[in-house]
Every structure is written in structure tokens, then in C-alpha cells.
Length: 102
Image 1 (cartoon, rainbow, N blue to C red):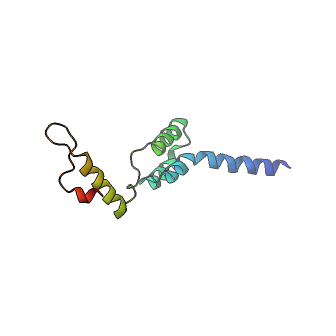
Image 2 (image 1 turned 120 degrees about the vertical axis):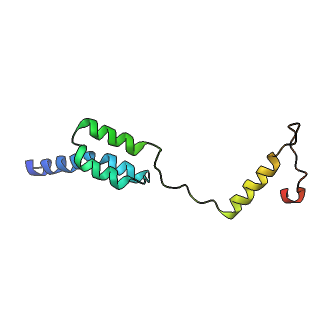
Image 3 (image 1 turned 60 degrees about the vertical axis):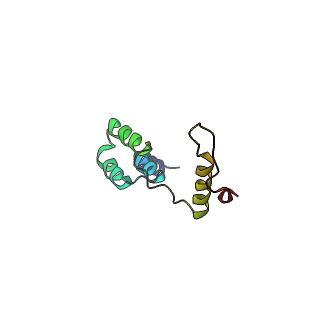
């Protein structure tokens, strides 16, 4: 390998490391992944900016909406809720609609 190809490999690796915060944001389905990418371009050259963006991209806040619940899962959740209902003494009560539990 000559010096030019080694330099090219280091440049590619450097760019990949530079954009890790943006890649993490996209991978975590962040709503603000585009904004994180924008800030990544301008502020990641500072170590503090890069670390801040990485923490922001890794955090749990700002994820896209959770998946929708299928109708079958909704039925199961309603059945579980009915079973978990209790009377005034804390005893589980399934007398509301016992046929719905089957």
C-alpha cells in the first residue's frame, strides 16, 4: 500500500467516527435525527460537542411513537384487566362477565 491509500483509509475512518452520533440517532429512530445530524456537522469537531451529541442520540427521550397494538393484543389486555379487577376487600373479582374470560 502506498501513502495515498493509507491516507484515504484514515480519512474514511475519521469521517465515520465523526458521524457516529448521527448514525446512533438514526439507528435509535430519534425524531430529531436530522437535527442531530445538522448539529453534528457544525459542533462535533469539538470533543465536548461530539460527546454531547452522542449522549443526546443515545438517550431514550425523543424516540418515535411505539408500535401499534394489534386487535388480538388489545383483546388480551382487556381480558387481563378484567381478571385483575378487585372488589372492596382486595379479592380478585371476575363476576362481571365470566364468559368474556374464556
